[in-house]
Amino acid sequence: MKGLLLDCDAQVAAWAFETYHRAPMHVDRALGILDNGLLVGAVLFTNYNTLNAELSYYGKSTATVGIFRAIARIALYELRLARLTVIVPKRPSYLLKRVSKLGFKYEGVQRRNYGHTDSPRNTGCRFVMFREDLEKFAAEHLKKVA
Image (cartoon, rainbow, N blue to C red; front, top):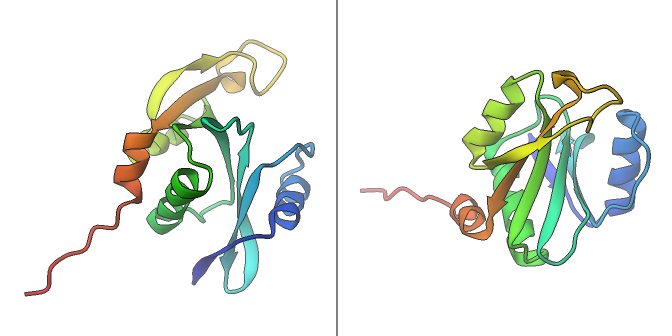
């Protein structure tokens, strides 16, 4: 069973940087993704400026609608964001489709975001979800019984 680890920002960020071989950076908020009590993923909010934050997601096969609803609620009610930004690689393209299905809108590309050469593999695609869309996504849809 998957769950979230809250209020352990430093530990979750350190796990993500070590596990995914990333250079440590300042993290404004971090959520851990637990599976049967083990840390298997991380959600990092970085570059927070009171209106916008960038979202980084680490964890293979850990994404669920419930986790993304929790992310949307934290973006709305804790960070009070007007927009949430995600940058994903142009290749492989399946990530572009998944981010769009979640409700993020395509905003443009960032060339050489993932490497020194100008190639599709090193190009980042910027997506954004504005406050109104976050509110819709964060809402729980309850079905009436009877």
